[in-house]
Amino acid sequence: MALVASAQSTAAVVGFTPQAHHWVKLRQPISDYSDDEALLLCEESTDHWLAWIPNHGQAHLTRDQLLLS
Image (cartoon, rainbow, N blue to C red; front, side, top):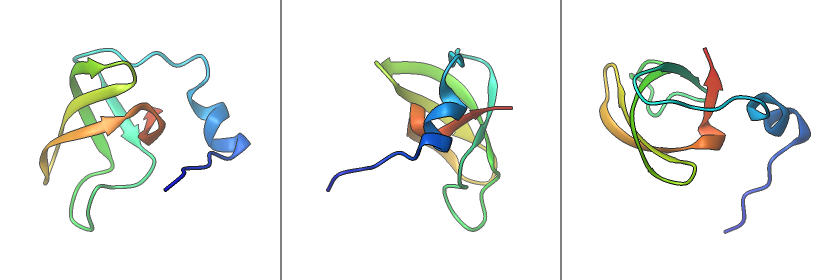
C-alpha cells in the first residue's frame, strides 16, 4: 500500500522539526473520541514518534501525521 502526500500536506511539515515534550496537532484524530493533539514523548526512529494523546493513550505516529500546534 503506497501513501501519496499532497503538496499541501507536505508543505505543512517543511521547516517543522518535532521535538520530545512538545504538543503538536494531528492531521486527523486517531479515533472518533480522541483529541486532535498529541504530546510527543520520544522519537523511536527517524520520523517515527511515541506520543500520548488525550482520550486515547499512547500511540505510534509518523511525522506526516503531525502539524505544528
